[in-house]
Image (cartoon, rainbow, N blue to C red):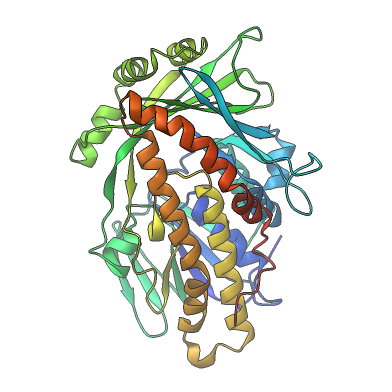
Length: 425
């Protein structure tokens, strides 16, 4: 239990999703002794959203969650399914490659070692929420819609739709790709654009004797998209079925909501795209999946403004991109690195009361990594876009080569611990 100190900063976080919650945990954990911040989280939804697909938490992501006190909660509740390696298939010809998380001794990557964990977004959020509730310096209020952000030299004030307000020393915009913090204050002209691909997902309950073609998790490439099939709990009685595929832009958020709500139309589209698969379990898994959802994948431009003098954007609010396998881990690293930069600034005596020094140090440290991730995400979009037989055949040769060629780079990143990396100032 971390009590807030009267000498600590008063921090406002917009967004009660996993980015906002882990930011609160990181600011608490890495605060200087005796200067734990008072943190107020405001979430627009009436309650935290514990619905969604399943994500792969890579070793670096698990390392951060362990530092923040959430991984032990996941393990205590038996959330998720440990992933030794990811298998890659061509749905017409069979297995192409593997990407493993086991390390040379099969125990995991790094010291201490971590493998990967496939977990539903809901379970991940529940674990982080439980970690947050253990900290009495953190409060969360749901159902708060921000209508105005007013930044002064020494404070920032939010005005809510219900007439209430909140004032703090620092505002963290952790409110996702359609961030109010960005659109109302930091960079209003930087709006999200549709990437051209959408994510369709559901969960297929299976019997113990149901045969699948993968050990834990598999990426299945077809001519018209990619289908992820994966266990997501230790019982292995359910398979996450998630497709990334090229879908024509509907044109509006309300239009996407309408299209995404038609589960049977989404199922029919997946059966059309992957119905010629030679892997026997693909069609039954699509047919068994319950409550299919279709979500458009939005992105931001590669370069953009992340901050003002007292407001900082983190996660998708700053750098949303198509999924490239490490998106969630990148968010956790954001929160830890920023918290360490802010702590260093506090320890140096808050020169002039200007946070710009901490902000600049964080952005200098982080932007190069994000730019690399952006380029990786472009490859994902092109790989899952519709292709003819020739284009798909070329893809089946390129993907294994790419995994082999980038193996060392991925392992280096999986081993990194941003709690100890030199922050440069």
